[in-house]
Amino acid sequence: MTRKKVKLAFIDNDAARKATFKKRRKGLIKKVSELSTLCGVDACAIIYSPYETQPEVWPSPVGVHRVLSQFREMPEIEQSKKMVNHESFLHQRIAKTGEQLKKQRRDNREKEVTQAMYQCLMGKSLAGLNMVDLSDLGWLIDQTIKDIDRQTETLKSECGEVEDNNNPPKPASLESGSSSGEATGPSAAASDETWNLNPTATAEGRLGSWTS
Image (cartoon, rainbow, N blue to C red; front, side, top):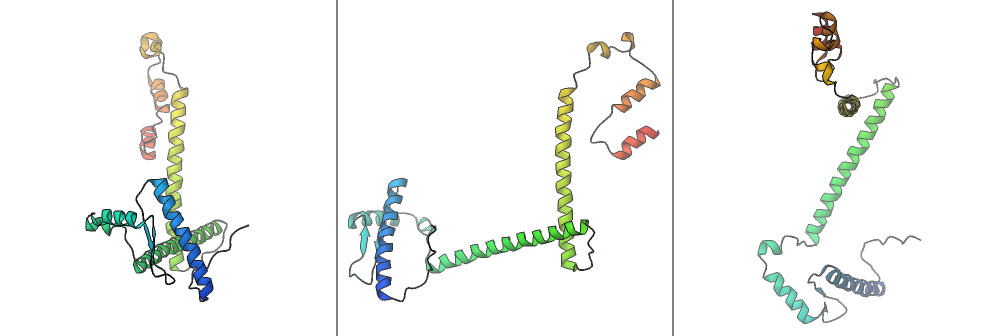
């Protein structure tokens, strides 16, 4: 059974607020103790309460003074490196949430444009799209073509490696020339041209060699 999500808001009822404070204070001290034990770090806690005259400290007043002394001996830039107050913490949360919202909107937009692209491929008219939609659609098509080209090149490279592994090297007897019965003349030239499968050659270059 899932726990009910607690609404983070000020508790108006005094008795309920006091009970929640005591419960959360105990849990906070437990977490600080676990952090210190599990990670081997020096930690302390000072909790002021409107219900008590003296603050509660952990692990002890001596331990708190020792940790605070270590903190004050650090350079000022190191002291404030991870330090936040309530206002700066809220600013960080708002900025982070804003970035998440921006990313989600971009993802949603990309899904919408992707759906429109597939609908166009099925024959749907572009008449209902505005300039922004058409611009986004053109960008997505360009990205899709680039992805297809990359995948095609990867497959070509993998197929080329398999071909090289399956083709054994030419026997030495065939490398000696006409003395071992190797064909010469125009027919041999045509054979060499047939095996010229340079994947980096342009279509114009290959056609030029065939028509010359």
